Length: 163
Image (tube, rainbow, N blue to C red; front, side, top):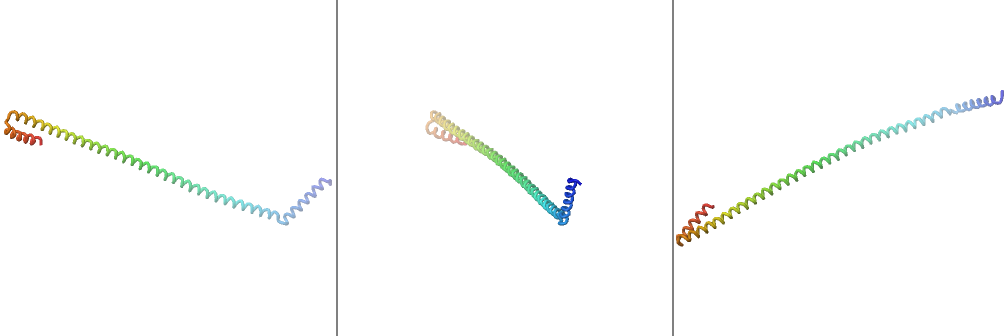
């Protein structure tokens, strides 16, 4: 045997002794236990991560639901405000129209009253002028006593016809 094979033999013997000692002190069992413990720890961490992910999904769902509810509420508030603004605008428009109608009617009443007063004033002036003309005409043709009687009766006739 040469030196290389002798070294290989001793390396093989040392390896077998090493493996024997490792099996004797139960190193594979300890390694298996350590690996099992590490696998259990990783499994627990994965389970915990899954639970956290599910909780995060639930929270995300809740926040999305709350956001949608808030958006719907905001839309409802905007719609209500728009309806109220439209209603106020319509009410203001109606009040303005009513005001214009009232003011027009009042102006027409004042115009009608002014017309009636003008007509009455013209009639009164016409009566006064007619009476004065009749008096002057009769005064020239009739004596004083007959003129006064005639004037009084004419005046009563004119007043009766005008009123």
